[in-house]
Image 1 (spheres, one colour):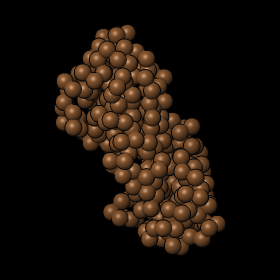
Image 2 (cartoon, rainbow, N blue to C red; image 1 turned 135 degrees about the vertical axis):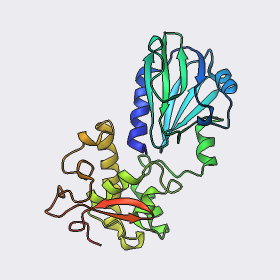
Image 3 (cartoon, one colour; image 1 turned 180 degrees about the vertical axis):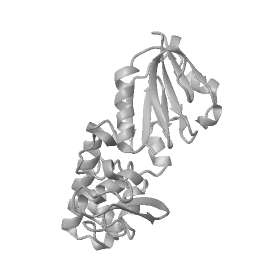
Image 4 (tube, rainbow, N blue to C red; image 1 turned 90 degrees about the vertical axis):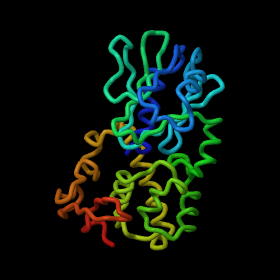
Length: 260
């Protein structure tokens, strides 16, 4: 599932391709992708307007257009593609935003688990969904206060969108690997020094992935992501990567350098 680094990459892609182009309309190829809005209402909200600016919060992307604010959630397989309209929409396009300049922005979602909708504002959406602070906006003090207030496993703490927004299964594994912390450790197991370490690694890992365009193959070879398969050699020691289930999620770690 696209996580914070992926959605930040989508945001920057939209910013570089699709801002400030007048829209001629919207074509919805599969209305099941729409959440709480019809095709006609969506088209009316953006037709004749431009995408003016964007905001990302956690795994959600917001786009301001006139008086409307669109939101995109990318599910498991969502992405954006800016194309020449003459070429037609790319495969699995669910919503197509047409521009006056002869191009289109395609919202592509093969498995139909994403959502496109309208909201009064990004702040209204965040409040309605009870989302926590964005993982790259939270301070170390706020982070450790939140951690100390919870009784949960570390992986569950990192992945809870109502606590901290943006981290999912893949990057929680990477953050814990960089921190040399076992995924079954509890929040109560961490002292102030360990909490500071976890926070700093969270910021480092997320920013490093954004620099790599959220492409695991571009991540440092010392990271877990390029080796995230059971039985692979740990890039940090002579241990082997192991897969276990934590809250029914496949979790990868090195039992030798991430001791419980």
